[in-house]
Image 1 (cartoon, rainbow, N blue to C red):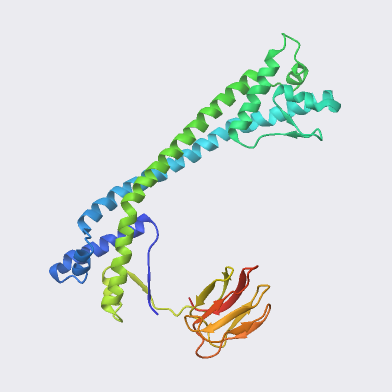
Image 2: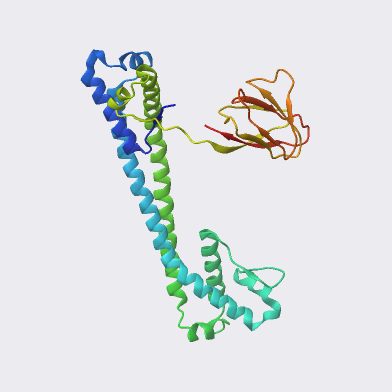
Length: 313
């Protein structure tokens, strides 16, 4: 059975809208979609204007996402070496008194019961931990911080690392701001664009019915039609307690397998009238002629039913 292949993405969808509008204008009052447009209150001229605005918004959204990602990268370039040095300082302090690592709590460092140091995973948590640590170091009288020997040996400048943290926070704020702007523009874009997508799909489905087997007519409006025969595949399904589902497109000569832990009941057709065929757990039922559509119920009060079937969908 032929089906429409609908494009994905604003650029491709706008191209389709442009083709539909051009064909509609060229055909004038004889346009195949004239009646459909009037009946559904669709204004293609306004749709084109909205599409142009939505495309501009989408370009802005894409740019803002890139800016946000770039700011995250710049943030991490500032933060990563600082965190590495911070961990070295923490391990040094821990080595001074390994039996009492919990003293690191006074430096803003979290230590578990096993004396294991735990670092936060969020940006805000990491920067707060670093700032608290530096604050503790600076709270000692001049020349009294236990870190001084380590800092001198490893040529670490706390003021430089503090400045890097401040820069990282600035980049993080910029990343959050641009990400929020992108999200807001995306919402505005969708308000304009989603109705257009609905119109395009509706027009396409109408043309498929209008032209019947003459699929070239759909192509004249820019729609692509897939005439290939879909291949059968194994489809898994779940049925809730005391519920039922209808399976269509079952392959004659294929099978239905009960993958659950309780019996399932199979009925020919679209309802549960008549006597069911009972398929036990693990049992495979061969689909005979006349059973391309069946209804399967789950009589269990305890377990959801699970099954798989060879179907064309």
